[in-house]
Length: 138
Length: 47
View 1 (cartoon, chains in turn purple, orange):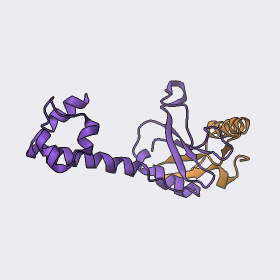
View 2: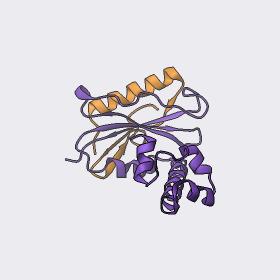
View 3: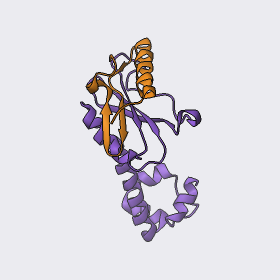
């Protein structure tokens, strides 16, 4: 969906300011622009977006195999197909990326993402890779 | 839980590929049925 379509779901008409501007308007200006009812909805939607971005920044430290297992277990539970994840860790074992590399048996594996990026360089010697193979419960 | 020969072979290949690129592969976990197997803890590969 386009940004305009998403905004229309919140009750904001096509004449509204851009999304960037909406996020920066104070309450009174926002009410002026989109009406009192839509203003509350827009405020809530923008705040949820901000919180979602902050939640993405939470990076666990995975110092042991058990900690890596506990991190991935919810995502891997009750899968019918084998998955191959790569966890990219910093030198202090802080999770930098969790990449689902393949799903299915080796013969029909399909590549979703083949590259991980770390904060400095994707190939920096400090980068740690932790491959995880999950097997469907039998 | 017991790793298959393919699991062990994959681990060795990943470790070797990591060495070529200067990336330390620290472990390979096999997860299933609420349990896991750590290749490093079992000493199944030279990490």
